[in-house]
Image (cartoon, rainbow, N blue to C red; front, top):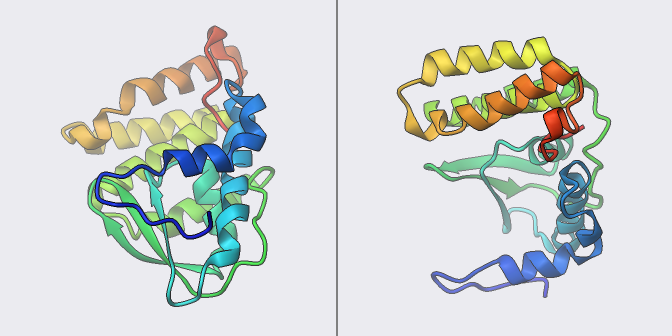
Length: 195
């Protein structure tokens, strides 16, 4: 199951389901499944990555647990390029021997990871990545920062449908979390944050 060949139009879903089976009990509790699933997938695939031969691709490179994990592993992966409208591709420069836990990383360190990776994204992607940081900020109770980030991104990317499609859901989450003071279950919503 280590090296998987997909034909055009094939799906990674069966591999993902197999790799995350151990964390299925957390379904619906995204605060827990996101970092655990990211870690489980890394544990499954990292041992077979070959320096300067393998690549890692992260679709929708905006989610906090992915950005934090890749930030923690920046000595092992280098940004190679961005796939337009989709993914960030990394070259493997050293074989990873561990998969870090993305929880509990200091806020300033997470901000530095976002600032590092944002420079590799095209302009529209910078808006999407920065929205991800706003989302993360609200999930760790940095509500004023989260709302400030949202206002900046909304002003700059209002006419960009790729970025603006996320405004209602992320703003809704951030405002509800700020109003309740609880990023985990704002106003009875299912948790979508990360802490």
